[in-house]
Length: 268
Image (tube, rainbow, N blue to C red; front, side):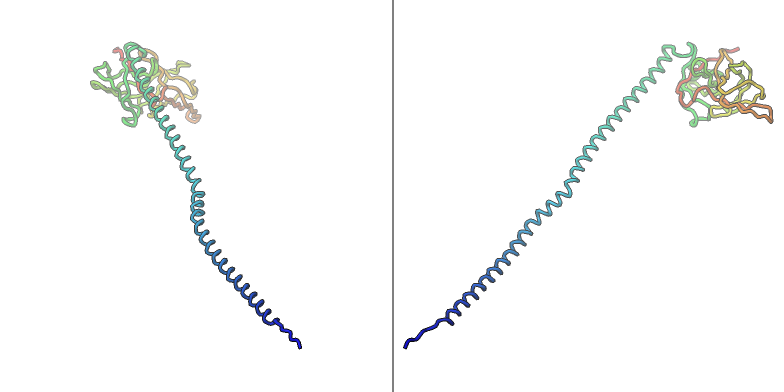
């Protein structure tokens, strides 16, 4: 009799055990790798976050750095331009004062003035420092100035006369001084007329409506010579009264002059 031994159950058990062990090891390896991967990734992220933040900050502020340098260059350029302008203005002022001084000396020493006997005077003060239509001059009795002397701008342009003197100073009233009456004539027609100061560099008069006078006419006054005293600016006709109202002004703007010529009056 022959017996056959079967190992089927034992062989099946061994294979099953091996499969289970393999699966367990695979699971264990996966868990270990996964855990390591998370830790490594977190560490890497933490490590690179510092650089990322630094790069972001640098990127955001690099534009500001260029702006700072740009603003600095602009300020340097503006400062240079301002220094150049200040220097130019200063040189221009020096040139102006030099020319002004030279002009005055030429008038005084080279006789670039109306006549040899005219006295050159500088204006010390004018309105509003002193009463309107008055000039405070730096020449007086010791310089030969007397009350009644004529005050000119140029050789034949009359603006007023000396009304008060002291040793080294004098005061002149302009032809436009309020209520000051002067007698002259129209240069174009030689018609005589009376003019009256109204203040502020202006004069006025009233003439018959048929009196020949127009805007722009020159009003002359007589003295040692004939002088230009005013220029007609407005002519208004009043038909109801039968008169013309005339408004005139001094030949020059007093605010723009710094020097006058004093003509001594000849005693008659």
